[in-house]
Amino acid sequence: DTEVTQTPKHLVMGMTNKKSLKCEQHMGHRAMYWYKQKAKKPPELMFVYSYEKLSINESVPSRFSPECPNSSLLNLHLHALQPEDSALYLCASSPQREEQFFGPGTRLTVL
Amino acid sequence: SQQGEEDPQALSIQEGENATMNCSYKTSINNLQWYRQNSGRGLVHLILIRSNEREKHSGRLRVTLDTSKKSSSLLITASRAADTASYFCAPYGGATNKLIFGTGTLLAVQP
Image 1 (cartoon, rainbow over the protein chains, first blue to last red):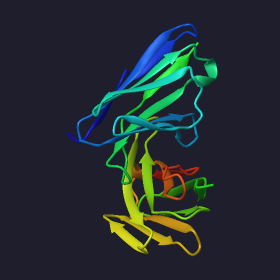
Image 2 (image 1 turned 120 degrees about the horizontal axis):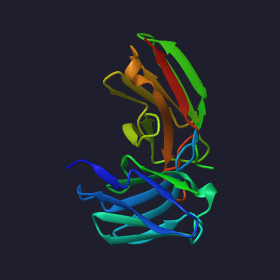
Image 3 (image 1 turned 135 degrees about the horizontal axis):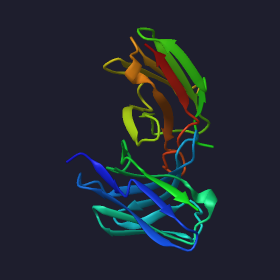
């Protein structure tokens, strides 16, 4: 299995909602990433997990809360988001310092 | 910063022509990677070139790296309509070992 899967594909939520984005890979990669991408911009790194531990947090607001329950799963918990948080959220995994494998993304709209 | 700057921002060519995209960066790197993104989808890794390599080929792709000039180029030969996408360079290494995507080149291949 050489895929990174992400659910849901699309998510619409209100500013008071709590939701979660999920990411899964079965390639045995020990590094996993969350990126945020606005239209016509490059992906921006949010979080990096290495061996299931948070190793990088790019000063992301606390309304985004990552979680890595095991080596195959990565979640991003969302709470009290703002309309400007609407974006494509991409998950990726890699065997450490090599190429990253990306999921198809979750298109998030915050109303 | 480690982020790459790409040139041109947009490129329109006819099918069968070659497309060249350039990337410049500012810090030392371990490797430099190129990715493709079709509209609104996840990124696909194309090629990785290490800091001690000068040129690398993969199918119709040719990547060069000049660490003295801190620049790289991606050449796509005999382009096809299916090559229409955004292309990002991603210098990897430096102090943080994070993958930071460049500004991207939007390539349109006209049939």
